[in-house]
Length: 320
Image (tube, rainbow, N blue to C red; front, side):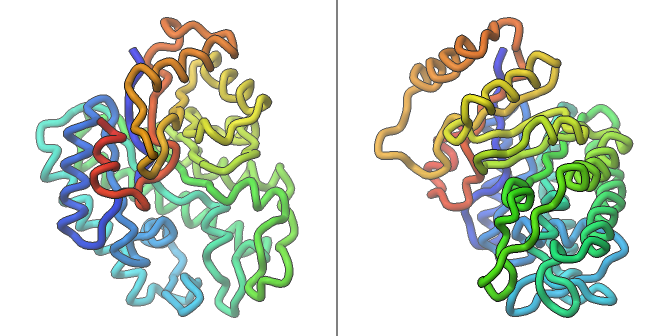
């Protein structure tokens, strides 16, 4: 039976909105609930802020241009860590007695490298040594993060860790702008991209989690992602090309999980019916030659991307 889940982010601006997001997720997604993110609460709650909160050994602080590496943890990094711990407390309180699988999300090494600055400015992406250090710090921090999650959730729970890499395709294509905006960072070789992503995915696997990778962008090299160690793909169905269809289908045939984003992340003019959503997925499965009964619960249905830009009503409706 096909399961349902979500990508991660939800609308909102304060802690009450976060509490409500947790209730919605737990109420609507019994198969694979996830720890929600409410980035509207500020930089500490953003995707990059979550990554800064988790990474070990490297300090960071918030500057006018965004997050920047520092010699030691600044007040904003400490706030990000405190907010993450508070969110985990909320999740733990509302999931008492739950012993199934659940999902958490974390920014990937290449998205972090493209959004965090070096101490003297411009992105970490422009420095080979800095981007290696950042990837390794993220991997090490994830080991501690998963140990904390395991302690909170109990040994009976399974943990999926979704690594968000919305910038990966742009990194490989040399399309990430420099700080000035007049130039682009050089493209990263696929071997290096795979290695850094692999460090993070390996840390998840070795810590008892199941590593998935998510991107809503077009032209994501899904075979590279799988080769780096991903055991699940979270994709936006609307941006997939014919070549992507084959790569995603190969993952399902290999026994890996695929979360197919088949609902818009903001409210459409006409809400699709269950039958319309089902028909879309069945047509795709037929196109790639996969039997729905064989695929089973390895295929999940999710919104096309995060729900932070949606209304609270659509956020709940889409998950329902």
